[in-house]
Length: 362
Image (cartoon, rainbow, N blue to C red; front, side, top):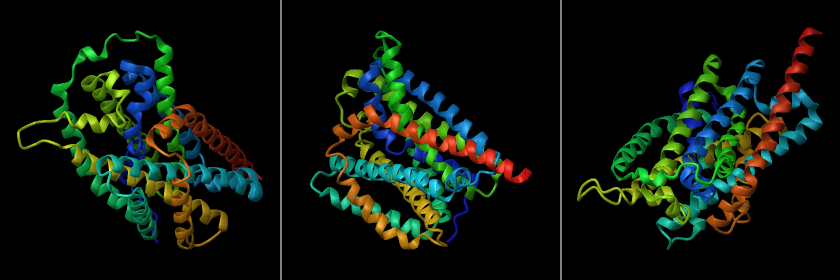
């Protein structure tokens, strides 16, 4: 099993992780509080997200981007390090289950006559097969499919431009900065603080010299996609409608009618979104397995694939009953939850660097 990935694959992995479920939730959780200023909130979230992740990358560079699971053991020792690693793994486990839940919630909107269990099991089964093949195989598949799907993203945006009404962005800052900051706070947790988990796979990048550049470029690219669709949702639908749509970005695609033949393209966009959801979910699934493998000091994580899959599926059906409950939980709690994990990882890296220098000097 080969886990090595190239810097280009890291770029697409980071970009798809950033877009992931956030493309479905970002307009809803941001527009609900920032109204027509949601696009400003997204800009603030991207800036803060880049700064926070850049800080982590600069620190990790000092210890050659070793896995966060190894850093934690270096910082706290075997026993306390195992407890800290379990906290990080449980966070990834929870997030993975939520992404699977996002998938079946979204698919029910497209095809409501199929049981949600079908979509959940299908998504998890694909992740199991991909994890068994290794991170390198996933990186290649993700890279190949992303080129096509990003073309669809760009094309759909260009077709939406004629429908944008700039009057929908006014009055700017009518409610002041507090709603804008609240919207930025909501978006910061989904997905920019979640990217902290990718510190577990940076060690597998072949060319370590380009890790920081391609990681940040992937973050910026994914953030730009989110910003574009949040701004487009406000410009085309208006803040009032964005707050009332379950999936504003999917509803947005219904407004594309380029020709008499080229209509109902939201189904095509839906397929693209399912892929980025799968990419994010699979990345999280592999990170969980890598963490369990590290704790168990195993040579391979294959023995853990089935039990982790069952656990993810079980938790998916125990988290949130519907998309509204999920969006409410995300807006109120997820940023603080994710920031707590960020702080844990940050402290682990700082202590790990200090102990690594002390060990090398002695």
